[in-house]
Length: 107
Length: 118
Image (cartoon, rainbow over all chains, first blue to last red):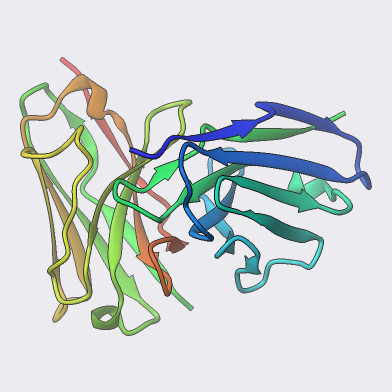
């Protein structure tokens, strides 16, 4: 099983600042990586797939990068609606696995 | 607009059974793979089981293999998850998801809570 590790576990950021979230795979997953956002009491929402392709309706302040084992989700200027938990997910091999999540909270 | 509506969750005793359903609308159901993903209270996400567009291509997480069965009825635009021999650790919100062009969850339902407790 491919283990996905996200860091930091919690990121404290002020509105308008940049947030950088990291995700590491235990073995190469090429570009088979997705990112999701989840707010309390809601289902996850797809943000990004194939590392850097934004899902429908996702604003341009979200961007993704990386290849192989190291990946990054960047939120260029945090808005109030961006405070949430973010998960990365690999879909290179079954079982598809998620990271444990990074909580982005208001500083 | 894609809509996924799960039902069938509830309280069940250990060793019991439940069948979850997911009614899909707003897209051509028979053309897309679907999945079940779960989230235990206060925990992260676990991919339980995907199924291909025609009903093949099923996989199961080790934690549910031999106990859960995923299926679909394309004539009814409905996805199912048959859960047997339920354990306390199966307690979670179960989400139905429509897959995208690859093996990621493009759209999610609102989830249905399964509680396994004596």
